[in-house]
Length: 229
Image 1 (cartoon, rainbow, N blue to C red):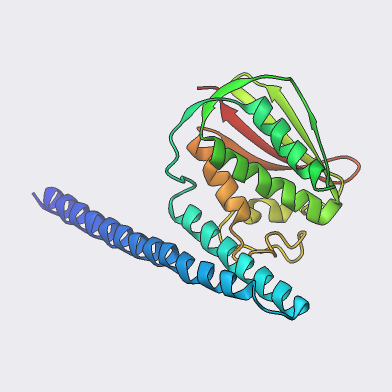
Image 2: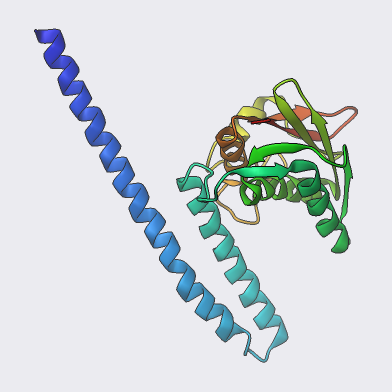
């Protein structure tokens, strides 16, 4: 009898804690969503600032604020944007990402098959790869995207020849709100330390994983493995 009573009490407490967390998450998500409107208004007003330097600084700060809010909202949703899963050609998506960076004069190249279909959320996956490529460009100046089929689905490596991340810091860098000042200063653009944790959440939502590996003789390989279906 005592064991059953304790189990019931524990169950009630678990449900209560879960409800409190869900309520707080909904509240924070609503606040983040509502903040987008005044930021948009401020951005429009900033366009009329005559001082070019001041205008550019204001627009940069507002873009940074928007990036923080978007990152926080994605984190609160465990990497889900609400987008529906669909059959997508991951090879074409990665080639498109590479071409978009190249069009901006960034050294990003794609190596892999011309076509490879998986099941997933295109916008979420593109955000994940953009996070990894942005980090590679920030600390190495170039990035290589490699796509290969694997036993479970597909493997995507984002490789660079930058300073890398010490072995002792790799696991910590995947945790939310972690900024690796000694390990490439990840996510300095947004300041929350959410970029890698969001990418990992997106990979997990696709029945996959994110792993940080060393490259020889130097550099980092951010490996995303995704299920094929």
